[in-house]
Amino acid sequence: MTESGKPILYSYFRSSCSWRVRIALALKSIDYETIPTNLIKDGGQQFSKEFQALNPMKQVPVLKIDGITIGQSLAIIEYLEETRPTPRLLPQDPKKRAYVHMISNLIVSGIQPLQNLSVLKQLRQENSLPWAQKAISSGFEALEQILQGTAGKYCVGDEVTMADLCLVPQVANAERFEVDLTPYPAISRINKTLLALEAFQVSHPCRQPDTPPELRA
Image (cartoon, rainbow, N blue to C red; front, side, top):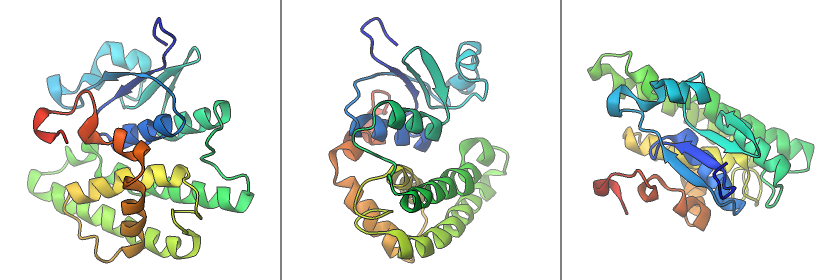
């Protein structure tokens, strides 16, 4: 926490994991301070000794709040949900809650890590784009089928949930890696609906303190 009592979020503007948390903070109207952590500059600021003391995994996001330090985006979101439950991001109904966890984990465990910067850096440059496209497309094929049974206005029914916080940043990754979204109409529809909400706009990578001028909107 800062001297003013604000939580501190260590974030990178383009990090989809950080974006999930920024959306949650915005939805719950939590005022916070951002400390940008550039994952590319200086060989990656997440590898500094100072940052490793915060998160030994050397990843963003990290949130300092209520006297504790939390890494991993879903752990942060669930802590916010338990301590600041309005608006609710996890349904009370156990079946719907299970769907939210299923979709969230499909994205954060089954898609995003396979196209993450740390993985792509291990590949030859000419192989990195096809690899990322295949990883995202494979996951989206499964997700599109799942959404046929769970979606209403959003991923699970008609209320914004943690699953939606995972979906929008992953679609942005797909667009950045030039994935054709035509085969995924449910994903595209839900993403478009969510991007119209203020919390998803203010947390967008193009509107962060560390967004480069040429990418600002």
